[in-house]
Image (cartoon, rainbow, N blue to C red; front, side):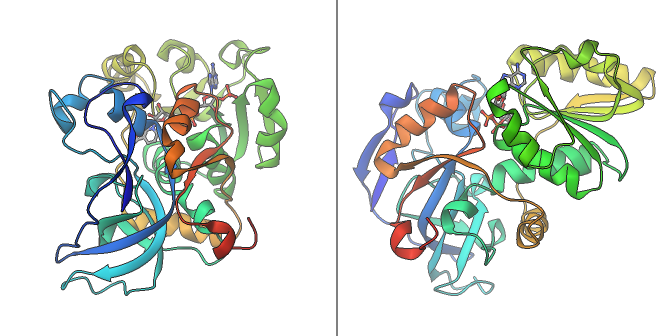
Length: 332
Ligand SMILES: NC(=O)c1ccc[n+]([C@@H]2O[C@H](COP(=O)([O-])OP(=O)(O)OC[C@H]3O[C@@H](n4cnc5c(N)ncnc54)[C@H](OP(=O)(O)O)[C@@H]3O)[C@@H](O)[C@H]2O)c1
């Protein structure tokens, strides 16, 4: 099969399109023929070993996992002998980060519990754009942020992968949503359902005097003290990513501020799981959430796709088309 492989850590140029053996499913795995995959910040973190911590997870000197790509959508091709949930021909999607990645390839083996049947109303391309970003947004809002109907919620970084899902998921919980983004994306964030949109190049929401019950920041963007000022007295701030300095600040000061007052502030790491992807699937099937796709690249252009995402201004998700979607789906 064709796959995008890397043998050493570095910039996107170290990624090569190669022929590699098609994997065989273990007993609890299925072999998936991948139709589409999407790119996440995790891919370039693993590619560059940035932060350095990645080397403790994937090899100190060179990568043990050589094929990146966590979000996939495709068809089950074969099943391991203990795999009972899915059958050959099933259309599935999922985040296979905990199965050892491998989505930038024509085939991958994944445990059954990483996958869910693809929503019937989505193409493979759309489905591949969902798992990691949408489940992260769900964990941030529902589990870390304890979102409640009627609250005021602010999403900082509302126009990227996590943010576009966060706006829609927050609306699905019956909240009043403010999205923060750059000027060219304001209309798009409004179209996702945001009640208010703030252009961060013109207005600093942390100094406007407005207070929010819940703030989800895709990345840090501001200091934790700025976020504290923008929270209601019992408000919660959660951060899904950011620079090392912002992450350390959230890890160090977040618990201190949270222990000494009624506000809660901190970062979180989202772990993929089948149950929460199934929850997101329901939101997709009822039309409450829609994937927003910025650019599509063929498998051979994964390096360009990662280079684009790394610039930090994607409009929703960046997808890799692996099988010919046009043939399979007339809507694209
Ligand atoms: N497992 C996990 O816990 C997990 C999973 C997924 C992601 N993450 C982390 O979450 C973070 C976000 O991921 P993502 O997929 O959403 O990234 P992304 O698609 O690159 O989106 C980042 C967004 O940030 C916006 N932005 C840039 N500068 C800004 C500023 N000063 N103020 C407000 N917004 C600004 C950009 O929008 P504009 O173009 O409008 O500026 C862009 O849409 C990453 O750090 C990632 O590592 C963690």
